[in-house]
Image (tube, rainbow, N blue to C red):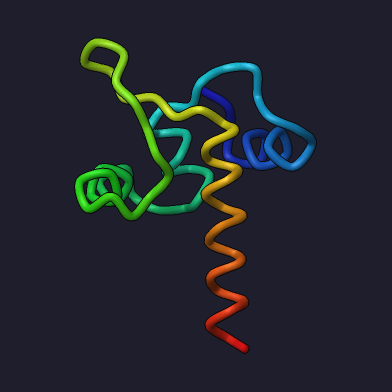
Length: 78
């Protein structure tokens, strides 16, 4: 698993070449991993998928979700 600063730098510089874990998502956003699971349950966080019993996130989907959150936040602030 990448360190938090490494993960953020990787996403800013381009997409990582691997799928992200719930721990990666928690580190990226600075939230507890349980929050990531709650987002998935409530369908409010980035879309993830299962590989067997493991939850993974496509970096492209995470980036798109972040962009949508920014657009929503900016439109609500206006």
